[in-house]
Structures are given as C-alpha cells and as structure tokens.
Image (spheres, rainbow, N blue to C red):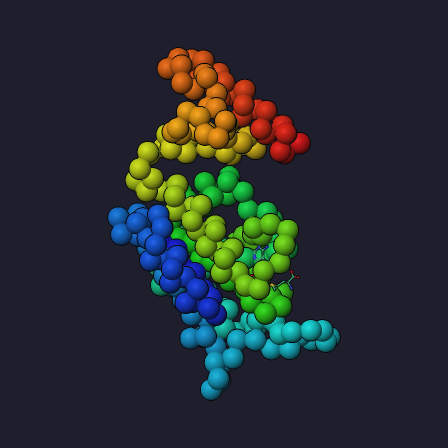
Length: 229
Ligand SMILES: C[S@@+](CC[C@H](N)C(=O)[O-])C[C@H]1O[C@@H](n2cnc3c(N)ncnc32)[C@H](O)[C@@H]1O
C-alpha cells in the first residue's frame, strides 16, 4: 500500500481534500494511507519557530533547516527500514523553481511505496533543505503562497492511478489526455443529442465502433495540434 506523508505548516488546508473526493475513497478502500504532518511539531524553541530572516537581506522569511530535516527524517525512520540514502521513499519538494510535474511523473510515483511531500511557505526553503529531496516539482509557472495546493494536486493525480481507485479500472485512464505522451483527449459528449442548436457529431451516434475510434484518434490529434503546438 502506498503511504503518503504531507508535511505542512497549514495542515488544516487538507481537511476538505481528505474528507471529500476520490482521494478520500481511496483511503477508505485501503489503496493508500495519507498522513498530514504539522511542521510546527518540529519547530524550534518555545514558539516552535520554523522560519527566519534570509542572510544577505531581502523581503520575507525563509523556512529553516532544523525543523525540515527533523520532520522529513522522522517520516523516513517511521516507515523505511533501510538507512537514508538507500531509502525507497521519494521525497518531493514543492517549488515553483522545480521541474514541471507531468502525467509521466504521476505514473512513476504511483508505483512507489512511500512518498513524502514538502510544502513550502513564506519565501520558500533555505537552499540546504533541497538536499532532503529526491525530486523538486512545480505545478506550473506561477507562484502560490504555499505548497499545499501543489501537493494536493500531485497527490490527487497519483492516487487516482492506484489499482482499484477509479471505477472504470485501467480503461478509465487509457483514453485520457496524456495517456500517450503529450496527446490530448478527443472531445466527449453526453445526452441530449442536440442542445441550443449544438449537435453531437453524427459518428458518435452511429454505433459503428471502428468509425468512432477513427474519429476519436483524428480529433485527439487535431486538439493536440491546435492547443499544444
Ligand atoms: C511564495 S512561494 C516561494 C517562492 C520562491 N521565493 C520563488 O520565487 O521561487 C512559497 C511556497 O509555495 C510553494 N509553491 C508556490 N508556487 C508553486 C508552484 N508553482 N509549484 C509548486 N509549489 C509552489 C512552494 O512550496 C514554495 O516554497
């Protein structure tokens, strides 16, 4: 079973995420376990401090090494019987400066046993904290206030790929966008056959599966060309 640890200074941001949605169902079914860890439990001193002003000046606060090393190492120790370095865990740092997270990454991470997500805050991490991470991922070229939504987005995309989570099984993802590298899904339609003058393409109502498949392939190529080249 995949164990996912998410470390954050705003653990309550995950309450809705873990209560609703397919992710909640996956946890209930035993496909994965998700632990939310409050970084402040590893904070320093009486005030459980996790941030400090940056050396060299500059705006805002940076997350300190001490709490992050203690928090991540506590999770590796908690579930991995092998020493750090050869640990099977993947430690994912959320950062706008990371490599862009794509479906291929979700597929790869869904095959792991243990994932640890690091949610940054304030102006981000002291650069030395990067040495804890096996991966640094961004969810797009924009800056958010914290890594919680980025972690939630990645976890959602990983968990839905776990066996038994989606109703339709492997077929449910086989025709989706990015199932083939970089290729987008063809347009889809449901009832009614006509809505405000907009008709469902005739081929989809024909019952001819070979024609429908050919149409979907062609539409998939068209949409990908128009939107991604
Ligand atoms: C305000 S941001 C820090 C931005 C950092 N000073 C920079 O310019 O790259 C605070 C935290 O939000 C998270 N974050 C913000 N945007 C993100 C993105 N596009 N992808 C992943 N994480 C992001 C990261 O965890 C980051 O440490």
